Length: 178
Image 1 (spheres, rainbow, N blue to C red):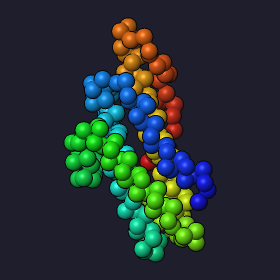
Image 2 (image 1 turned 30 degrees about the vertical axis):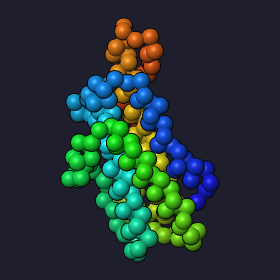
Image 3 (image 1 turned 45 degrees about the horizontal axis):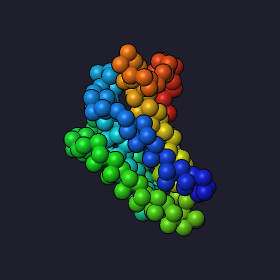
Image 4 (image 1 turned 135 degrees about the horizontal axis):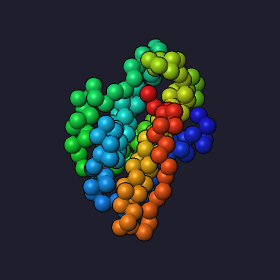
């Protein structure tokens, strides 16, 4: 695995704290669009997906060409329990599991990075490719959090001097996550 991939894997998630540090609780928990996740729900989704990804890596290491369906939180009973946690405890859990994932990936012998797991939509992927997919998927979710934080401040722009102005990109973005 490329060193820059390992570095991204071990650090990319830490930007969430920067995006939400100055937000009041209503900005984190309130859905700005009733059909889309709030910041809290997006963090819960990312936290739960860390566990899903760890399970997938273990399956790839133990089984021959395991098959994985697209992860859908609304079909995962554990997701509701994850959402019920506070944002702070979710971040703590995400950081803990991420450390485990980083250690796991760094301990995999190089000859095992070519092991295959089959994704329902993306097809055959090596552990390297699964790791890149995880990072790309996560970066999409991080961008959603960034946009939600900016949207909150933009909606309140008459009351705040540190407004983040973002164009409404939702109609133009090709989402990376399935």
